[in-house]
Length: 390
Image (cartoon, rainbow, N blue to C red; front, top):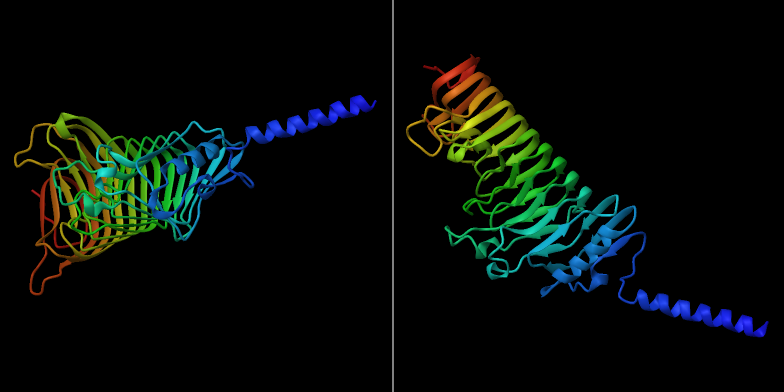
């Protein structure tokens, strides 16, 4: 009996030692919370924390049930080009971004088209808690106007995505790209780069469906939102846009391509000091359609090209074929124009376009805002300036 008890004790001790050995490299977790600091992140703004982030992500993605990646506050994490990829075992993932993530200078990821790539992940929530920030060191890139510049955050094939309360600043190129995603919501975001920073779109959306952007401020050097081919059911509400190039559908049809966009609705937004307001742009020679689009209840302040459909984008003479623009509504757009031409409907194949309850006056004393209209088929209601089509 004594021998048996002794053997049991020895086996228990050996088992404990083996378990400790197998877990020696595992960071401690509590309630499936994976803190990047526990994986070696320094957060001093100097040390490269990329590997710590990747290790923490691996455990977050591989956990059972609901899992959290925690990026603590009061620290600056230097992170190089990085990918957070699925397929994840976790049924849902929360990234709590409480600190600041900063990119290296240009040479750190000069050959990449993105800085942070998040792909093939479903049921992902990113919450900045009102303090989380991602900053891209764009000032080291912008002087070279011909250099390809990476996007800061690139979401690819992510479904049921929620991003809120995050500040994204100074991106080398576009700030947020959404590609191949379904059912994504962005709210209470603050996107910011200087108004003269090149190609720094706030949001680029392509090949995506059911995307909502709301209650956010976008101050950039290019489009506040660019909605590209293959996108549908895009809603933008209660946004402050400017500086920037406004909210654009397209450009569509470049290189004689076939592209489609439909069910885009922009409402209750403010545009301030933007080079465009509500814009649809297509290349001549392309095919496809942009349809079921509305811009409603828009307030303008010192906006150039407040309402514009440009089907001659990039050329002076239009081709015979064009992307068809139809079922478009401009309603309740008011404010001041910083350009002589406030309404520019330069169509080739525009059908069932409705424009009404428009009141746009010049921001320059003693000047009158003007309008231009060509190849327009639709309904014209009350507009200032008056729209006459030929």
